Length: 169
Image 1 (cartoon, rainbow, N blue to C red):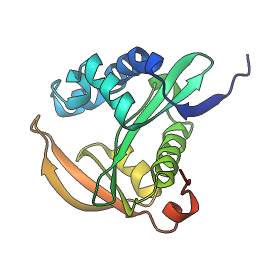
Image 2: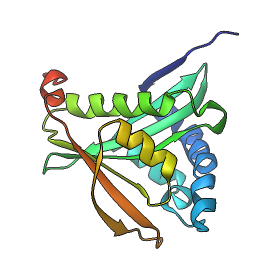
Image 3: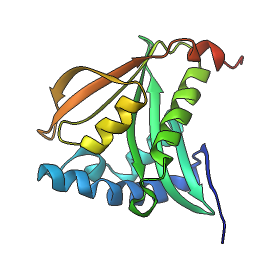
Image 4: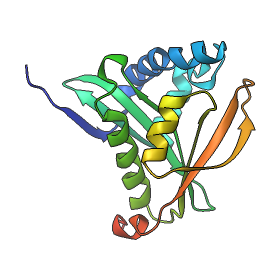
């Protein structure tokens, strides 16, 4: 077989696969919190399509199958918000989440104006926290999500990476 996983920009045709993957991947988070109303599980397909049109959305592919995804968008304040990082359960534990995180950081920095990266995860999500801390993120606060789950807010300075990946228009 020997196929390798590639990471690329998502296309409009990926919307349904991303939608299904997200639903599958966030089941374990919902179970951890006893809350099946978390954002990724109640997001509509139309909302996923809108994110594809407006945000930096990357997918990991194994052949034609989307096995990972992540989104990000940079606000006017220079904060690039990263979210909905997910990897198919059978592909977890092989560094794909870290690759997707690095790729979205590079993609957002390449758009220019990025001063810092920000993401959040549930306070009990130890695997996520380990990944984010290894990637250089530090907790800067917490908040309660619309679904009632306590979320930790993590950030890291974009540093020189924003200059290194700036692409002229």
